[in-house]
Every structure is written in C-alpha cells, then in structure tokens.
Image (cartoon, rainbow, N blue to C red; front, side, top):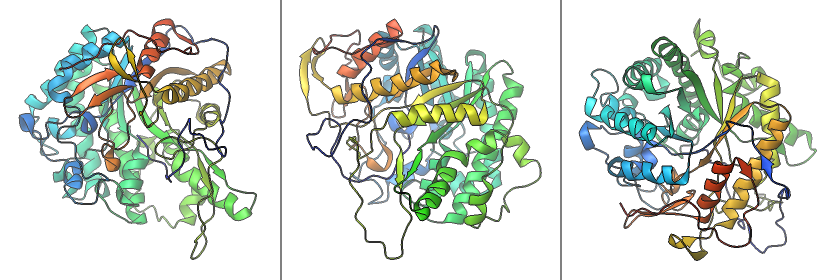
Length: 489
C-alpha cells in the first residue's frame, strides 16, 4: 500500500470541530453492476512470516528491518500473521466472509532464492496449494508478482538500479506463470512501482533505504521495463489471461492560488499520478517534469518504451487519500496547516470525492478497458469494542464509513461510464505495515499477534453483506452478527 506524507491529526470520528466530512453518505441503497467483484488484498511480506522456510532467501525488507530505527516500533515480518502456516484456515475465513476474490503477492525469494537460476519448487508449492485452496473455496486468486520484497542477493548486485534486475524479474515471472498459469485469470506484474522507487531510492523510508533523486529515476524506469519484459512472458505462457499492473494514485491539490503552489502541484501530480500510468498508457514520461528535475534519460534504451506500453487488460487502482501541495521555500519553517477534513489514524485526509474524480480522469486520459480498485482502506484506532456473534469485536464504524463512502464514489463513476469491475478492500488482516511496523492497523479482520487469533471486525460483517447482495447500504445503528467466523488457528 501507499504511504502519503503524514502528520499527526484527529482521526475520523474525532470531536475536533476543525474536521468535517468531505461528502455525505448516500442515504439510498446503491446497486453495483452484475458480476461486480468484491474482495480483499494482502501482500507476502506483510502476512506470511516464515522468513527462511522451505528454502526462502533474504529479501531487502528482511535486511531493512534488521537495521535499528528503520521501523517505527522496531518490529519485523518474521511472524507477521503467520499466514504461511495458517493459509488453509485463512482461506476458510475468506470463504465464510463471502469474498469473491483475493489479491495476494508471491514472494520472489521463495520461488528463486538466488534471484535467478533454479526454481525452488518447495517455495512455489506453497502458492500452488494456496491457489488450489482458493479455487476450491470459490474465491478467484489474483496474484501480484512483485510487492516490494526484492531478493537481497539482487540488491547486492544493484537492485532496481540495474537493467539486469528487470530481466531477472521476467525470468521469475515466467517460472511462476508456467506453474500456476492454468488456474489464474489475471496476472499483475508490479504493485505500486512509485513506492518502490520513491520510498526505496529517494526518501529512504522503505527498503533498500537509499536517498538519491537520480537513483529514483533509474529505479522507476527499470521497474517499468520489468513490467514490460514480464508482460511479454505472461502473454506467451498464458495468452488467455488478463495482464495487469497496479499503480497508486494520490491526487495533488494546490494549497492556494499562488503560482508557485500551482507549479509545484503540477510536478507532484506528474511524479505521483502520471509517471507510471503515462508510459503504460503509451504517453511516455511527463516531459516537463522530467526536464524540470534534470533526468537525463540515460537509462532509456531503444525499444524500452514500446515494451512498457504493451497493452494491458486491467489497471489496478490503489487509492487512500489526496495531497495538499505547497511550494517549498528556502528555510521553510511553516507549520503544516490543519487538514480541513477528517483524517485516519495515520493522519491521512479522508476525501472520497477525490477517488471519483480520479477514476473519471483515468478513464478519460487512458481509456483502459477495465479498472479495478485493488486497494482502498484505512488505519483507524480500533479502540471501541462490542459483543457480537464473534465474541468481543472491534466496532470500527469509522472504517466502515470510510469504505462505504469510497464505494459510493466508485458507483458514481460507474454510472458515468467508467469501467470499474471490482473493489478490493485493504486489508484483509491487520498486518506488518512496512516502516510503521504494527502500529497502523488496516485490517477488516483483527489479528491478535500474540495468539494469532483472527476476529472479523464490524466492517468485515458489513462488507460480507455488501458482497452477498451487491448493494451498498447503510449499516444501521446496531452491530451486525455477520457471516464471518473468528479463527483461532
């Protein structure tokens, strides 16, 4: 998932009068199109644990977590949700919730521990079992090939600063598709390459922790090249499957009418919202921003852009919040202005209309045949509980409200002709939230990390009803028993 710039602020449902809602909940029931896909999403490093099981090698995130100060609470992903050993019970839980689809990522380090070379069949067997288990439960598996956990051995050889890594990724993709391709209808190459390149190579807040603008440009191009090269292999090995890439979008709005704010906002929109979508959509890199930031394009070789812009069948859209942009000033000591609208526990502004506007813009600008909301959700305090059919349950009306209002925006965009085919809530579980450790809880299912007990939250019960009915409706004043089941396994 993406991490917008954050500051401490009141969360949704707080009593500070400065914070207000960015829209109103639609009182009417909203029916989504027949066949609309309802599901949830996770990623390998955030939930699997078992960091060296069955031949798995070290990833850049294993290494990053081992450095004191890199993760807010000093934790790591060594256990996380222990999904590697508890996957069968987790699939049963998803089935009890009535999910149509489950988006997960495959750990490159399990499949090719050396980054390249011989396939580790024991590691790939895990995903073979998971896919079969999902299909047996009536849940569509939607694998992502890369969700940030690059093999450390490849990082030691240059990581995403090297073209060789893009070619290694294509080999890895081919190995996975050859094994699982007979059962997979949609293959996603990359998750949020902006975060991989920007947070990993420019700001240093994610693995591998570099801080270089020029490296960020190199990494961004090689990530997109990896998408193109892997896309060729996927098309060859699984010609009937859909090819997808998942991009994160944080729409930027200028803080004022000051020309400097407007100019800075244009740059941020290019970097955060067009730098990857434009090349994939055949428009090339944003010219003005590339020039303004001094990128010499030395990494771009003949044929690269044609590979990157090979047609895709589905664009995955990850959305959490928008960004208010102010032009930087020399020795800028201005305090960040209070956010106008309510915020999540991470300090991210809740502004559902930005999702509706984004979907319309994406459709107008690129015309991709299908869009899917592949991540949308929020961290909330989860400090209110109620007795329910599950026992003591998190009564997360704030999260439910967030998800409901964003789905209403999806419905509105569909009514305007935008081809959105599904909505996957982030996340299925409370999990390891990257540099935030376990301090940010996004799950619709609570995880007790001491016992690994899973307990659906009120939002999960409500989401189950939406998935079953295909109708977005108000939850009502009382907690609902729902169809989900808690799991002790």
